[in-house]
Length: 171
Image (cartoon, rainbow, N blue to C red):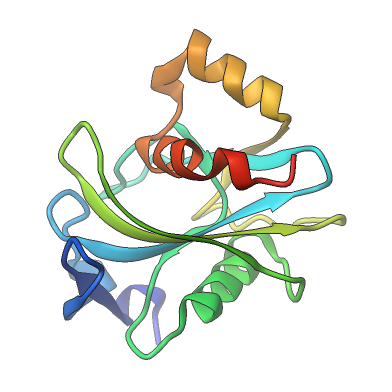
């Protein structure tokens, strides 16, 4: 089955399931989807990537954590995290550490319910250019400096997770 044909979970502001849609039918600006983000570290650096510019993509050419995905129907958040790790950056296995769940409303009105994890990974990555481009390994200091000097370069989906969970991250 094509990735875009899978049904993804729609939720309300409390994270309660309200329905589902085929991924290709999701209005990324209006629908509230349950997303799963995995922040990948290689010791003291976090993997960030440029969001590819393609039709239907919001926040193109901005920096975000990689990987991230929409939760599919009948999938746990951990399964979704592992799926996107393998699909987007070629990581299989490894221990996922739950950061938490949070409802976000970004300045542009986009709403997301997110489950966030972090993991350590040392080794090669196999990037899927449909999902991840122009990766960077950044230290905490580099991320904080960039958020001050050029805040528009950081995608709201990353900035929201950073603002909530930065103090829980392993660097």
